[in-house]
Length: 253
Image 1 (spheres, rainbow, N blue to C red):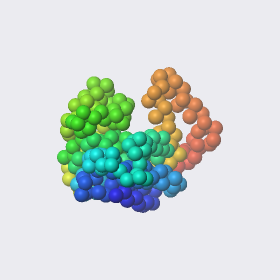
Image 2 (cartoon, rainbow, N blue to C red; image 1 turned 90 degrees about the vertical axis):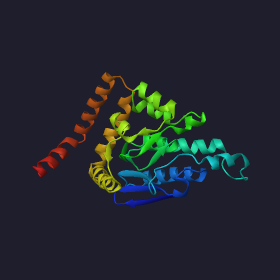
Image 3 (spheres, rainbow, N blue to C red; image 1 turned 60 degrees about the vertical axis):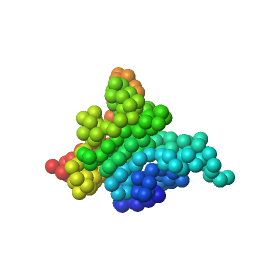
Image 4 (tube, helix red, strand yellow; image 1 turned 90 degrees about the horizontal axis):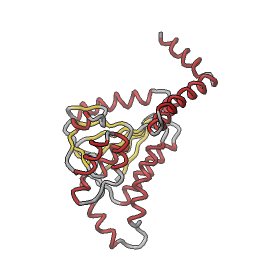
């Protein structure tokens, strides 16, 4: 169900279960977390790309598999283990020094919506549909909700988490939750190549520092965040980083 491929500095992780609209069963959830962990363990990895096979990103948890959990044979994970495996994915993505990119076609709903929002960047086809569809069944989008609370203002975030309605890619783009929109699959492929290529070409140390500071600043008072930025500049200067940057810029002038 989960296929992973390293292409230079880019690891592409494919959710490959189109017969179930790329929904996650317990094994698939664990395999996705293992694929992300393996990508992060490679010193060559500078970008992780997550996408779905065919014309769907993911429709989230496989409800048939979830319904069968009560009658599972011995040895299969229980519901608590499955939820722990699911949250593990987002801990890995959030704590990572490597940026992640979701490339979305078709439906990214329920857990698929959560997975897209858990990545650092989202590239999407304009016809893509998102949404916390769990709420249609009276089931809170419990992992997606804290992600939305950090990504978007409280009024929109709570609406997205509560209503369970389909959300267009255009609306998410306007809300700042999608980085690039494409009209067709071919255009999306070109956007992916350009966007991911630019990320992979950046200095990985500078990416890590920027990402770490950005994450910390999300929960800091502005004064403390500015001081953290000053201290980072001092650290870079003390280790000769500015001199190296100057040489790089001079070589390009």
